[in-house]
Length: 403
Image (cartoon, rainbow, N blue to C red):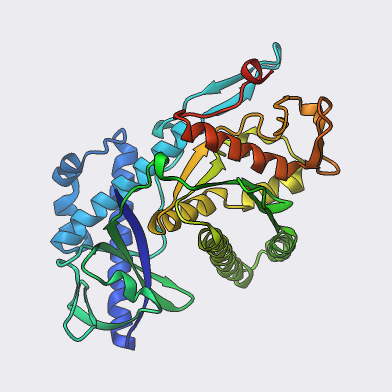
């Protein structure tokens, strides 16, 4: 299978070069907005050929994009709409009937959008060997609307991805914190770990009180507290509230900077957590995580807990774990989260009253086994991993089977 990663290289630019690149990024964003508006106005026909026929000459003549950049703008917007389409399908609209009390789920599609996707932030997509390439002296050649630039990248440990077994693809130019970055897509063919080759299983329960709790077949459990992370998130939230109350231009600029800073911090947290899990695992480990799709819609928490739930990037942590595990010779599966916190890992009894949410404990009324409720979930995930190794492609717990 092919494993993809993104190389995030900072590039050094002179003042004139930065100006040329920034102007190209602005015009590319304008072109993307044109394509997005056209899709919104014409029924979301996500077809490259149709959009090329309708918009290519406008992108070239009115916006001033070069030929390859015009094609890249169309592909980029189509990809964004397809991503939104997938997200909307996976998260249908749910409402409760006021008379019957029953919940109804309505599938959603792109017609639910009230306005087209917005492309306000300057950006630029560059095709490998057409718009960007490596030079023999180690510098990068980047295409702009005026001329090609030769810039110096900071590799910072990314040298391992510049070998022949890694295939480099499209690059994205972004500006963050006053610096310019080149995000390069890279892919490598890696050997997959068959379920018959797995040597160990690690169940990983993700949450708010504990960022994650891992448990392996040897009975070893690791807790990673989320207290410090929750405290810092709360600090960011208070700062945002203060700036929103001021509602001045400078406060809005500060809010924008703050948002980017918090997102980068959260990404770094996920990167370090996933790296630690993979580095401490034994060879050929199966990581088992819960499928948390729709958890935000299903939650009935209070306002503060709901905000904390929305601010934690469960999906990003899972994605980081997946690619790191694959490159290290491990594998990851996502299983149903149903009953993982209600089932006794010793006798198999399922009863939601056995879990004490307030004190974060679990006690089985049948066999008397008790432990931390998050640890219970991680232990049950190991059991689901064993079911997977036994041949079940969709392991899950059911009351009828377990009793």
